[in-house]
Image: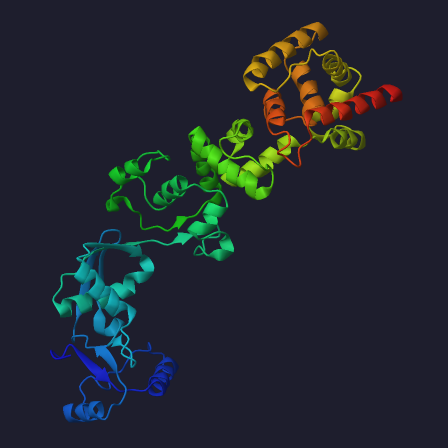
Length: 419
């Protein structure tokens, strides 16, 4: 103010509002008209002495033109008088406004480069004027484009999660979020999509940031997150899945170091895209919808994924289920209590049973899957059996092996009676 680069403005809010309305009615941009810009010094001194409230306005030099070489947008120039007019630095309460604070903050911290959204371009004009008036060199600027939703509107809450906390709660990893966000509006010139943080730091350059707005693709983020989730070290993934299962009540009384969590994590690892998927994936594996699958096959003819074909006289379900029950009854069916022993024993049993029945490949695997899991698709059947043994007593919603066998026995008996 002492140098005449700013001045007090005693215009009231009512006066300013009336002038704004008049300007809009006349088709002019609402801009301060400079009433107090060159006011009589004695009048100003008297009003200040009387304690009249005032704002402090920046005096935009006549004919002022501001030019920046934006790292993303190239040269950007403004006619300052026509664009902003004399703008406010401090309110009548003495509180400084955003642009004054930012300019002083950047200058005193020695900020060399400002990277921010394109919406700040008009703020840049004000901040450069302030910095020049204070004798500070403006930093370099890079104004990046907005992130849009799939409808090409500015990304907002109506498009879904927009905060780090929300994404974390939904099961996204920080590595995946960083990787995906870095590629919105930037690439290193290759087709590569997955980067570690150090690789991003080494590859990043403002010169490759695009002017075009980037579209936030939730499906792509989910895919990328899946790549990271499935590549996690065992101990970290177990810690994450254990928390998910505990929160959902899928598993109780176990922690990340338990055999139950280890087996369950190994079972679902290959199908996870979000960490939070661990709950529905495991719950599906622990369920046993055999009766529902068979009822659907009766009603719909083919049923889901060809259940009806397996239930046909030559489909193999009855024959394979009978062999399975017989093996359980005579103790030949391999126990899943010891995972290390069960894995090879299970494979050997399937091979031997298939050979005895004259079945191999899908003709033995599909009937066995339906009989033991109640479904036509899903994780490896042997792995499911090992998980059932490992989580026994810790999974309130699980249908255990013994319960499955009793249900299967009833289904086989009912079908034999119908036949």
